Image 1 (cartoon, helix red, strand yellow):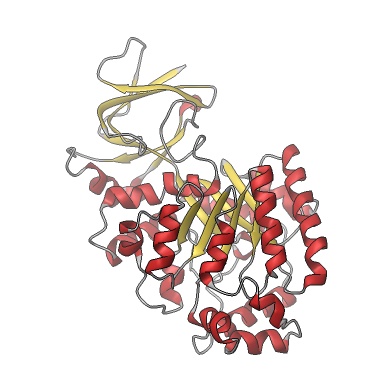
Image 2 (tube, one colour):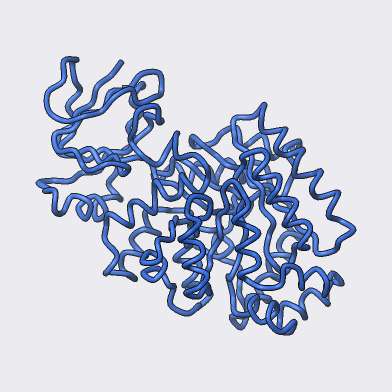
Length: 401
């Protein structure tokens, strides 16, 4: 057993502990507190011990991109076409997933919500075994036609079963309203509830999506027609953002990815169902597409659990959660440093269904933590000091020192 003392311990799920300590054994936290402790300690000095960061949404298949894919004239549908063209012309090379995992670990990430487009039996899936620590692999489902529903539900159940013998955890991901038939969404939500696996769906991401749902027109319809997959019946069911939210509330855990255009009624509904539902905000991707100001403060006021993610390198220059935090802190100066750290740790862990393992310093949780210089921080400013110094973090592998 090892015991580490620091100027501050920030459990996230509990108040800060000045002159705090954390006791670890065999990769798990066994106790924590502040003040004196009977065991011999390792004194880390003027640092804060915090949980590893949680990247609640990414697509690691794009981890080798040097820069985001061109969004053309700024239309989201044009970017989707660019993604399709990239996938058609470039195979996911060996090592890309592992590279994304390594990039994530290098920015202090201890858990990831990964959207996967390939089966667990795929050779590339073996790279998920090299995970930073805890990894939820959301199997993406795309099928607007009713005739594909049964096949895709079987594929999803196979993915859930495969995870039982893997290092990673299973998740499900109906891609988006414009690519998923209502019956497929309903079936995936039922699987989430029955097997207690998390689900993630891109929702209220763009004005083009809203136009498609409300009017049945716009660039996304044009794209689907060009691809010969347009199905008006599939789009009409469920048919509105609120209807999608009501379906998602039936899951065990449901992460609404982006939610850029959720209005007050939507936010209120999600806040009332925060035991199930979270929103994942991807700040730099939001900026890349030039969306309207993100309703972060309104969501928090509505009791919405907001997690953070990088999204992929197809819309973001890197996978750094530290840079993501710095960006959102600058964009939203009225949101406290404490809240931002909650969003980057516990809120993300909860969205992934991993809050007992990561995202907080608590008995039974992982002992893979971070230390951040905090100087002479006081209770009033310790979260701010940690946020400002986060790029100077070090990994604390408690059982490896």
